[in-house]
Amino acid sequence: MKKTIHLDATDPIEIYGAGNKILEEFCSYFPELKVVARGTDIILDGTAGDIESFEVKLAELVERRHHKMNLTVYDVEDIFDAESSPDRFRVNADSIIIHSTEGRPIRARGKTQQEMVRAYFENDLIFAVGPAGTGKTYIAIALAVRALKNREIKRIILTRPAVEAGERLGFLPGDLKDKLDPYLQPLYDALGDMIPPRRLQEFITDGIIQIAPLAYMRGRTLDRACVILDEAQNTNLGQLKMFLTRMGCDAKFIVTGDATQIDLPHREDSGLLKGISLLRDIKGVRTVTFTSDDIVRHPLVTKIVKAFDRETR
Image (cartoon, rainbow, N blue to C red; front, side, top):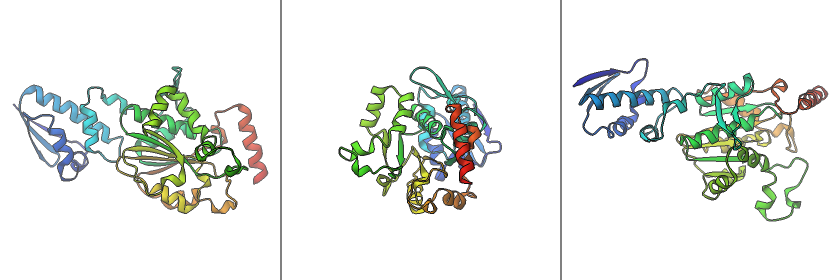
């Protein structure tokens, strides 16, 4: 039996990969099926069952491409995994991202959080900027945990610049880890909402989830990971460049920050808004801006933020 599949409105190289590597990996799962690719046409020659299965899996691969900047052979492996399902990549902005450890659904709250979710699936680097309490970091971590559970990534890396908000780390008791753990506690708290304690500890022990100060990122190449830089307003432009250039293949980078809460000795040293300005016209980079109207904490937080904003204008 022969059949020709036409890739509508799709650039073949996006599906086939450079040198047809993705297509070759895909075809390896159909050893009895003869496959010839000619431009946007794929000509199949084999049994009806193999052809039907090929079509179904190819549709999943094309669907996945709509939610990623680039496909790799890892995507092919995931599609043919027994637990794989195309539905897990079809997340609407108002869908449940994941469930908490208590079974509570975690989803985007409000239009700006929904915009952030859409931006995540459409871009490989997103900036989420705005005041405290808008859920920027929480949604970022939820998206990362979801990707890890779905095996879209191999690890989660969370980092913050080690800049003190009115305190000196050197005066805190204990070794370096003891000094840094309280500073990184908000990241642990969010993870603890989404991953059972024992499982979270296993992930941390195995290096699947890594939480570290920004300085520890230097020299690394971060492949197939979701990497979140929190409190990015406390980075200078050089540090931000160092962080962003750690991006490896199949990585998602999320940068969160609040330009009104800069703890650097000189506020003008902050590189967050400068970096956003430099990268704003690059495809695959998206900035989502939160305002005080997006605050999802206690109602008083909105009033507090607005009061301080009026004072600093």
